[in-house]
Image 1 (cartoon, rainbow, N blue to C red):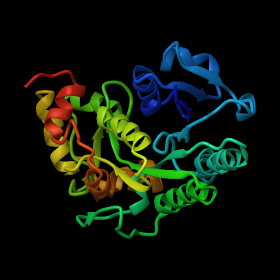
Image 2 (cartoon, rainbow, N blue to C red; image 1 turned 180 degrees about the horizontal axis):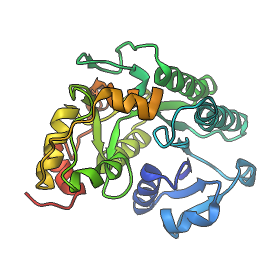
Image 3 (spheres, rainbow, N blue to C red; image 1 turned 30 degrees about the horizontal axis):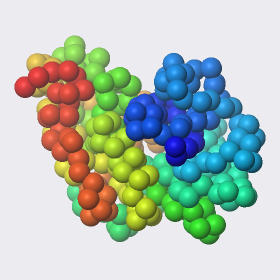
Length: 302
């Protein structure tokens, strides 16, 4: 039985991933600041620890999946908040890789989270794993995060970095924050609405991570998003139709900038990102159409 260690396992992606891996007969351990919550969120068969020191030297860990990190859109980006975002990603990943490389029986694979924010504001340009970036805060944060994970390659560990897009899920995630005004008929595009939203259904997200875990040829950076990104204007229209509401109340850019400061860039800019590398390896998406994906997470049948 292969043993997988997951950080950030109680989050949106991690908890769903835990359940899938258990179903596939993996042994799963989650490291969490609140170990008592793990069984409820991830399943009764999942083991819980609070620190790496709880894993004995003779315990074999085959793969580490690193999903930990403070939510980037939950609070305004003050200097204090930026430190929290960096510490929860960069410092934790550095410590995790150091622990992995010092073990006598090293894990063979590390799958580590990142985000499409690595590319910065990409406008309408098609972006693949080989594209460049705009040097913004999100790029700097993700770049430093990825560099720490890729250090594990020097110890002969296979590393996959997943630049995740906007995850569509039935519970949690960015969609739950958008729903209240839309259900009231008060939804609308953000700014001009031409910014791309690289979305991915939760099912495809956890399938992709599992695919990368099981394909020994997979390594390097992978875009974790649907092969059909759409603009905010298009997403807004589809969401409103699914809810049988109008979307006629756009939120001006100046209002978002006033409310959120620098963090407004998450809503007003975007990336037209494609998952070329995963598809080239043979990964198949369940949801490639945003209408069908939203219908599923909203439990609406077309």
